[in-house]
Structures are given as structure tokens and as C-alpha cells.
Amino acid sequence: MHWVTIILIGIAANLDNLGIGLAYGIKRVKIPVLSNAAIAVISMIVTYVAVTAGSTIDEFISPHTANLLGSLLLVTIGLWTLVSNRFSQQGIAEKPELFDEDKNYIISFRESMTLGFVLSANCLAGGIAIGANGISVIWTVISIGIFSFITVGVGSHFGSLLTKTFIGKYSAAISGMLLLIIGILEMFS
Image (cartoon, rainbow, N blue to C red; front, side, top):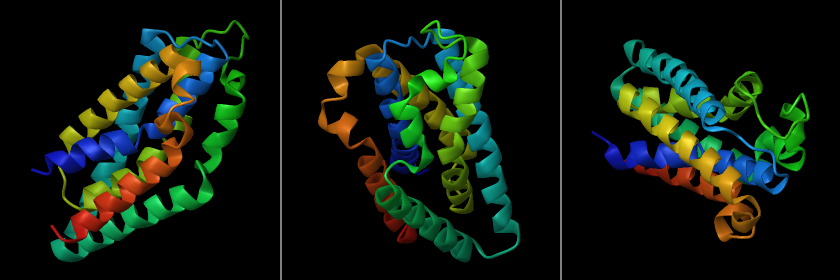
């Protein structure tokens, strides 16, 4: 089993969540445990669908070709993350109140559903690539969920403290580099 890859994918897929959590913490917008759990579960569901879709690719092409395509997709996602500077989530970090519809500085369970789907968008392509590489679906999904819960919670809790750290400032670049490294390593495994 690819334990290191599974853990690194969980971290890489959720570093942007850390940045978003930090932005919410700075603006003093609270993300309660239930809302954070909802975000993690949505990430897990999206990842499961994506990894399962990626796994079906194995039925149509050889495992070697599927592994190569999945690895190239991870490398591409990593490069795109580095170049695009946080995809469209940059807007969420700059205006975290967008998802606090009732403006009470608390992300409710209902509000967390929308936020969860937006934050899980980065799990789609990565999930398909992981599925094509034949990495365990269940452990990848669990890793994504655990690290989503941790990164959103830690980011939200520590807000202004962590935003000044290396991880807070460069979460998108770190995420992109991790995906790039994972893709390269998977090409040769």
C-alpha cells in the first residue's frame, strides 16, 4: 500500500483549506466543529466519487498506462497550482464572509455545505489521478477527510497567528509542490 502517498495526498489536497481557515480566523468568522465535520465529509464524498471514477480507467487501459496518466495528471495539477496561485479559492481567502450568508460570524451547518463543495473542488482531479494510479480508495478518502478537518480547524482557530508563518503564506505553493512530487514518485513506483 502507498501509505506515504495517501498521507501526502491528504495534506496536499487540504493545504488550501488551511489558508481558507486562516482567512476565516483572521476575520473572526467561526467554523464550529459540526460545520467543519460537514466540510470534511463533503470532501470525502467528492474524493470517493473522483477516485472511483479514476479506478474505472483501469478497466479500459493497461495498469501501467493508467498509472502513467494518473501520475502525469498529478504533475499537471501540481504545476497548475503553482502557476495559478490558489485557483479560484483566492477570492474566498480574501472575502471569507461570502459564505457567512446571515453575517453572524459563524459558518452554520447549511453554510458549510456550500463552502465544503467549493473547497472539495481540488479533490476532483487529484482523486481521479489517484484512482488511475490504483491507490486505495478508502484510505485516500479517509486521509482527505482527516486532513480537511484538521486544516480547517487549525486554520480557523489560529487565524492571524498562522497566516504569518511559512505554511500560511505559501500554502498553495506547498500544495502544488507536494502534488508535483507525488506525481513524479508515482511514475516510478
